[in-house]
Length: 496
Image (cartoon, rainbow, N blue to C red; front, top):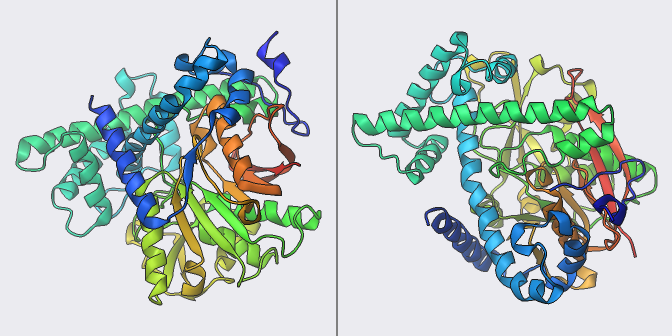
């Protein structure tokens, strides 16, 4: 019997299909840091997915499970599961390092804090990807080559003398992790090669992703295209970069759920944000003229209050992330709030992107439930045409946030039934994992959601017969008139 015959999904017309040293030292260090932060940030029990609950996933997806788990008896699988899940946790956390390198490439292409060179526009990046197969090893077309090399040179100089620029300091640490040393001229040449090679890698990867999406689009089935897009980066590093647009789409989904009676007013108290991200270089534009920040936990809290779905004195927001950078950032903000300090969020907006009026209105009103408008950081002259506003989130709302070190693919927070989440959010998270990993994650999510609770995500997930998570509906949101500039938010409910 085929896998498709074994697996039956119910997604209201959205029916997905199934598919399938030094490095270890880095992974172990990342894991150790995660354990330390988990112990100091929150004394709560985080456990790996038990075999008894992983077994239905292993059985249903047996043709596509990882090689170490394939063609084994249930008894053998049960004996190897504890060691496999811990080893795979290390492997997943190792991908943070590659994601950091992707972030540095975005910084290289878009950043303005280290160079006077113009940024690469979106049209230029699309041209780079289009032309990458026409020149050796993805080399940039001649009209962009000089610009990229100038930016590489300026970024290397900035990394060599970063001062107190947190992004340059981080870029230097990432390079040093790769064996680059900044003392003398020769190491700077190594750093330039390192940056340029990573740039070439990203361009080639983007070209491959576009080919995959084009192939899915050619089938003429929007569901197939959505399914392919939902696991597009399964072999890529785990990037923390974020943008504001998915938060707008989440508010649109929450509004729809409220108006249809799916999510009654005042019904949300406990919210979990899976992979909230860290705005190092904004995923859409790469802005770097303000301090790093996390936005989604505050955006969701703001939307829930605006829509009357929660009360200020009741809402609790917990971020679940496997990145020590994210966990540490949120915990520092919470500790500062305990001493009366607000959290300021910078909100740049580029009119050239042609945002829809609804998105512009969301941007203008962001934070009015949880904070006060303040003077934003000045936009650099090189970003002429970019508007900006800022919101100071009041300490009483920042204090209502917590963070946990959780690898949602393989781990869960154990909580009693009366303390489970009403709502879990995961945007641009599952796209980094394959169908098997997504199915394990959905099982962990189910264990943390109260019965009747919801998961909102912009990725399409397989619904196994053994799962109690079932898709209810979705909303499609456009950000601008440009092709494919939007999101589809699907909500899954934990059925009895």
